[in-house]
Length: 135
Image 1 (cartoon, one colour):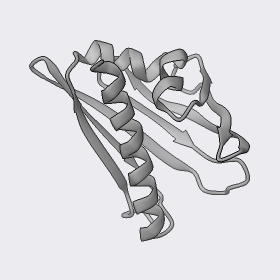
Image 2 (cartoon, helix red, strand yellow; image 1 turned 90 degrees about the vertical axis):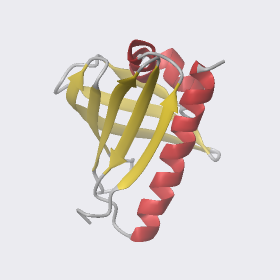
Image 3 (cartoon, helix red, strand yellow; image 1 turned 90 degrees about the horizontal axis):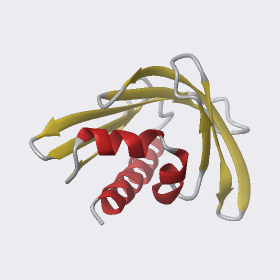
């Protein structure tokens, strides 16, 4: 499982400061992350909770902020309600001139199929982030 890492990336036509704000502002997150409501104080060691409805079912996923380096890196754990799996999500930002490269990884995928599924979902989320910020 350790080597089954889902990865997604995009380049956004916006500075890292703008992209970062979109990663830690609940009202903005809701717009590109499938309508989820995120609650956190965005401090290392603090909880993070995602609540919403997906495919007609209510959910509440939980995690803990592991690292937070403004405008550079956000890392947190994530577990879905009813699942024993815990993933670490790492989002890194790298400014490239007027653009920001956003790279996301998720570890601990149980199977190759799970890795591919996660990769597809994360890429859709990053594509939504890019579209929102480039409007």
